Length: 323
Image (cartoon, rainbow, N blue to C red; front, side, top):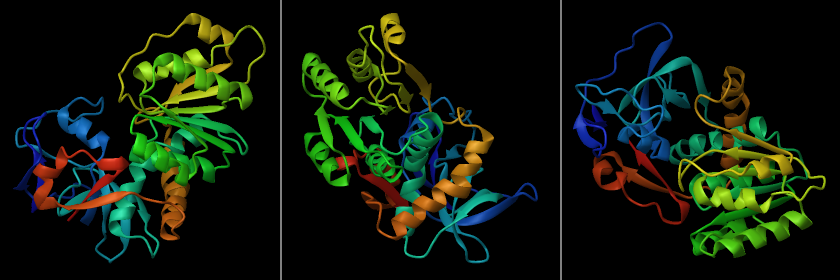
C-alpha cells in the first residue's frame, strides 16, 4: 500500500510502498483511510522531539496518529490508529471510534479531533469552565487556538481575550468570537499593561496557553496580586511553541489564587478520554456538520507529502492529507 513513511527521525516522510498492516487480535480491525490531518503532534513524533515519540524501527514507520476512514461495512468513522494512519489502510481498536454524521466532509472531520482534544479537554477537565467566565487564549492564531475560541464560546464563555503575533490572523479572530486581541509583537511593558487593564476590569478566570515560554511569563506577571483578595485563575498549558520552560516567581504563586496544570497525552484519565470519544467529539462533529464551527483547512494529496510536510500553514490553516 502507499503511505507516508519516516525511515529516520528528523527526516521528511517519504511517499512510499509499505507492507499492509496485519490485524493481531480480535480487538483490532482494518480501516480504509480517507483523510488525515498534519498536526504539530505528528510532526513532533516524526522528529523524535515529542515525549510520546515512537522508538526507532529498522524498516521505518508510518506517520499519523488518527484519521477518518471507512469500515468494511461502509460506515464512515473517525478513529485513532494503533499503527500509523497516513496510509491507504490502518488498524484501529474496534471499540474506540466515532461514527460521523451526514453533512461533514472527510477533510473537515479529520481536521477537528486534535484541535478539539487540545481545547475542549483543557476547558472541561482542567479549567472546569463555567458559563459567564472570562477566558484568555495565549497563541490563538493557530488552528487549535481558532477552534478554542469557538469551543470556549460554545461552553458559555462571556468574554474571550486572545494573543498572537500574526496581525492579520489576530484581526480575523474577532469574527470567530474573540472580544479583545493583544499583539505579542509589542514590547513587554505594553503587553503587561494591556493584560493588567483587562484583568482589573473583567478578571480572567481561565487561561489556555499554547505558547508557554516568555509570553507565559508576561501573563503570569500581569496577574500577580498585591496582597488583596483575588479570583481563582485556572492556567492550563497545552503547548510550548515559544519555549519549553519559564521562570516563575514565588511571589506570583503566593499572591494569586492560581491553579496551574497541563493538558495533553498522558495527563488525561481513562474516564476523560472515554468522554472525549463518547460525548465531546460527536458533539463537535455535529456542530461542524451544521456549519456552527468555522474550520480553516487546505486539502493536499498523499503523493505530495514530502513537499507539504514542512509547508507553513497560512493564517492558522490545517493541512489535511486526502488518501
